Length: 178
Ligand code: IMP
Image 1 (cartoon, helix red, strand yellow):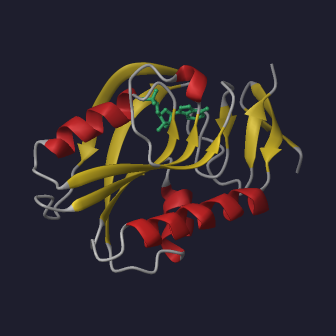
Image 2 (cartoon, protein in one colour):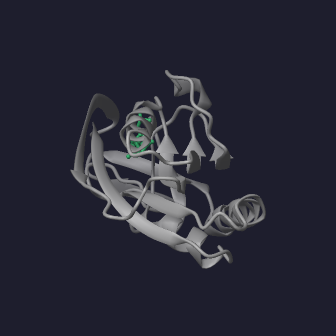
C-alpha cells in the first residue's frame, strides 16, 4: 500500500518496513555494545513506541528490564505542550542506567519533562533511544544518544505513530500529503 487515507488526510509511504528494521537493529547493537554490564531499565513511552519497543527489545542481548509509561502531549497534528503522566513505573530507578524508548522527538518537550521526572528518583544515567527525530523542530537542548532515523518536519503515521488515534498498525511509515 503506497497511499492511505486516515479521516480527512491522505498519507504516502515514506519509510519502508525493511529500512526501519535495519536501523532498529543497528540501534540495538549500539545499546548492546555500550551498556553491557549495566543491567539497563528500558522505559518505553506509550502508546507511540509500542512497535519500536517490541522490535528493539528482540535484538537486545544484554540483561535488562522493561517498563512502560504513558504520557500525552499531542492532539491532532500539533503539539499542545501540555504533558500529563498517566501511568508510572514501579521498578527501582535509583542508581540504575535508564534508557527511554520514544517513537519520535519533535519539540523535545516530552523528553525533557520525562527526564526531569525520572531524574528526581536518583538514576545513575538516563539515555534516550528514539526511533525518529525531527531536528528542525527541536526547541530544547537534548542529548539523544540513540536515533534510528532523522526525518524532515512533516507529520507522519504508521509503525506505532498515529493521527487522532488511527494509523498505528501499519508496519511502514507514511507522510502526510499537503
Ligand atoms: P514533543 O514533545 O514535541 O517532542 O512531541 C513528541 C510526541 O509527539 C511524540 O511522542 C508523538 O507522540 C507526537 N508526535 C510528534 N510528531 C509526530 C508525528 O509526525 N506523527 C505522530 N505523532 C507525532
